[in-house]
Length: 614
Image 1 (cartoon, rainbow, N blue to C red):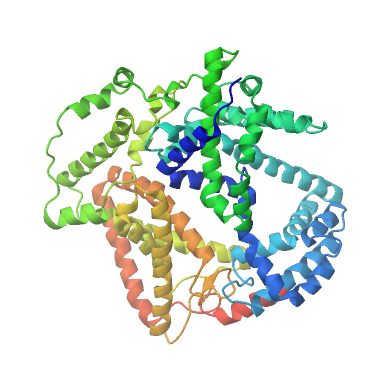
Image 2 (spheres, rainbow, N blue to C red):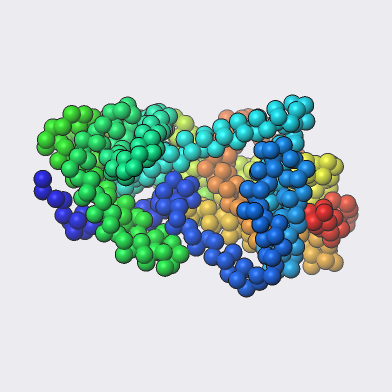
């Protein structure tokens, strides 16, 4: 049987990687973070810990003595599972005390004394979350044995669910992205959800689970695990192409396609040894940037070649590999049949739609702002939405993206919902005003609730006396307007939202301190990754994720509601709330909201630190 030339595979793999480097590298990095594949490539993330231990070994002497029988977290788990909750609690508190003490002595940017993120890091690193949860379950069941059983069952179920639906299945998504990228110039972000659109996520997860069970059982033999690794090597590719196959069908087909090629596949893997060594020397960084996506692109080409050989030999079950347009672009006749609606639009010369004149046009084009919501603005908005939809469909007609309408399994496009949640829309002044006030009130509710849960006390948070914290509303409006041109690029939108909101929060904190004799309304000192106590990683991540939710989901929903509501009622409500807000702003300049839980930052900080250490 003729060998497949590795040189040809690698040339084609490099070409594919060159076309789609960013998305290929990103999907491999996501896989590494999910621990689906390539998890060893993230070794560089632990470099700082090694450097810290080497530079200050004396700080870890006490920790080593506490966990001399093994890793401290494992010791805590052992105590919990053997009903020694008090011993586990004491051990976890010792570990947490040492971690907090090191953070206070080291770089203040890496504080571990305050904040939700710090608390999560402390609880997980020390294992105290296990003790807390076990004790809570015990109090509900009235028996320690019952609590331990429930703890084990819930923990096992949660870990299995994450592995089953995400880690176990993401390899299928990854290979689908690489397969589409071979042929097409674009791989839209929504293709990550193709299993959901065809309602086959559960089936794909089940098929991968069966493959994992078979391979694990074979691993119990002397060499069976190694052999079956290559026998089942093509299963995720097969499922990526046709997720409607049964588990046994995909496994059997993989075995038949790999027959006579297992040694060849082993040698192909071995040919990447030099790249992997280079990755190891760079603590995995080179693997993240190049080796992982390059290797995956090459093995995608390998699957294509084996699939072709199987088709030529007409081996059993190969007829299930029927997604022809993963390997060639559709001809004009096929596209005409499925995209006749968009073809009619493309063939018709577009009408010259008048844009908004003057300042209105400038604001709409660059900031997504509509000064009014009249007939002219409504027509302009409808035209823009139609152009965007037609552009997405025309890419498929032109062969730039995979034609999802030609997928053998019909997709649920849910066009109505997608159109009503058009995130590229412009917002009227009234919509922006409602969004500002609404998110300012939401911010107040969020902080009041958070303080109520963590301290058990109701505190009116914020500088103002009324139920609003304007930095939340300001952030939402600024993201919608200043970052309007980035909405078509979700990654750029996320990072820009982090930077914008971080700058807004930092400058707001600084100016409030300057104009109020140094009084602070928040201080993130002690939070993990903070800058001068004015911003921290926890808040920035919330702003980034929150900004994405605002731009792509909440703001379009709010705008839809506003357009459907009575226009007069919307205006009256907006003006009344705005008037109350302005009165509060003026009043708070003379009598700002201060006091316990609001501006007594230092006292709260010390109390929180004492609680963490004790």
